[in-house]
Image 1 (cartoon, rainbow, N blue to C red):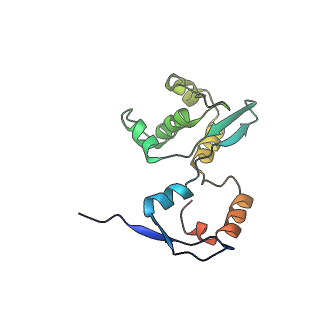
Image 2: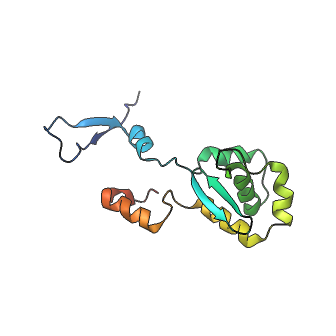
Length: 142
């Protein structure tokens, strides 16, 4: 039986008294550092704000049964799954795919899909601020 991996967790700076190093499982560290906040994108052509949570492996598994034939179709399916209103309701239904594919300007869809695939940081400024707080956050995970 394999052991659960534990990682040392550094004490916060300025701690009143040094204490023994605390250990956490690797998956717990990953969960703490995972950004789950939704991000908003204003689509001026539609006068709408779209909200997106982070993409997960489960999102890709969720469209696998729909058998997308191309990368564009896969990305449109992800867009339909992930785009939400401010109050968290889905913005699209899978029945809207026909309109998205045939009537919406491709540059608009590309902008939405690129935003959906972006890293967890909404801007370079936010990433720079995060690096100032935690220089290890640039270790290839984002």
